Image (cartoon, rainbow, N blue to C red; front, top):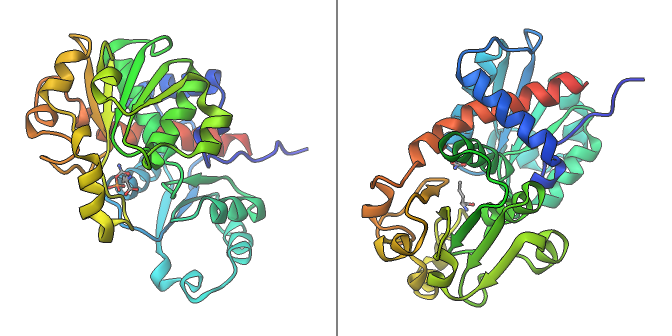
Length: 300
Ligand code: CP
Ligand code: NVA
């Protein structure tokens, strides 16, 4: 029997041992280890939203693994003209070895994965951004060692990236303090299922206290730009600035998935300061995803 294909649609699709294995492998690949993937593998990348890091890291990653990536904008594929998701999935699985999707619908990604005979990777959805958190964890481990038992503070919108942190906290057993105003908390169903290691508060300073890692993200995600004014008003007390970092552990790190808005969710002083590892974090998207691609593509 062929082994069942695996997808990476949300962080909890991996267990703790697998995440540790991926981080270790990402660090080996970053250090120059030879890829373990058979040559000539292909990745289709479906983008319904903009991207710099995700697109470049997957495309370069596949090239470095000896394969190839195809950029498919939903605007100029038949998906954008209403061809059913499951039909697209069945067709692509006959031509490519793996599919990455960035869109606004976790349920559409699940439907795609269900119909796909090849692994499907979530490159960001309305609910999750699991590849980002793989890179974040690799970065933490490189800088500070094991994250288990550490304290992570998330300030601001309880969004897709935050949701992946909630799951990661449960999978890797670290503590997550989310600080957000009412109406901006992480999804209640997600917290009920995966929130064992997560606390939600409206007090940003309480969340930051003694944190080993402070993380934030934009106040208006892609698709929410029309509402940026009111969102900014509600979230203005949740900026990560020097006052917040002063309450965190003295060797605390700052991360942000990028793109960032200096002066909104983070002050320039913090993101461009000595505790910020945002460039290492962005660069690790390449290595973490190469490890993920190797893992998923050698299962089948
Ligand atoms: N962090 C991240 O996913 O960036 P892009 O939107 O540029 O891919
Ligand atoms: N929360 C952001 C992340 C972008 C990488 C968004 O969804 O737009």
